[in-house]
Figure 1: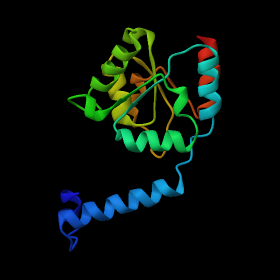
Figure 2: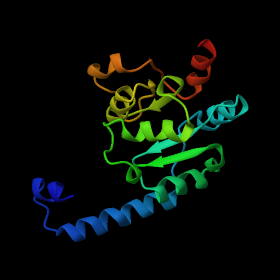
Figure 3: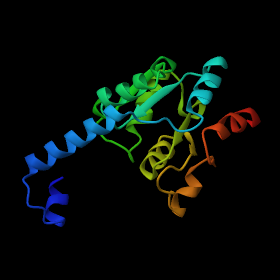
Length: 164
């Protein structure tokens, strides 16, 4: 926030900027956060086929659980790992390594679904296959060799899993 204030020469203090950002986030969350298309179908498929489902998020526990509960999908997850539980955030592998510990599985038995460059890099560094499902920004070409696949939607993950 401080960098934003300085770079844009905003006439506000750090405290005012943080307060404003927190207020906007609360308003955004109150309106509801839509799931990506295919999320419920994929989670249902994974549960039905007895996959463990973990969430590894840099977000706060409160924010993530609020969004999951708001959309009625919190019960799908076997474990959740949040950024505060690890020393280094993405692109470091720590959060995915912690998820493997919770799952009691080695990295080679796991799969990460990611939309961000830092998340792809973190999963790759952890030795976990990663499927890239781009969201707002296409990952750069330097990340193409780090993913097992690039799929256009969560609906496509089921077909990918069935071919493995």
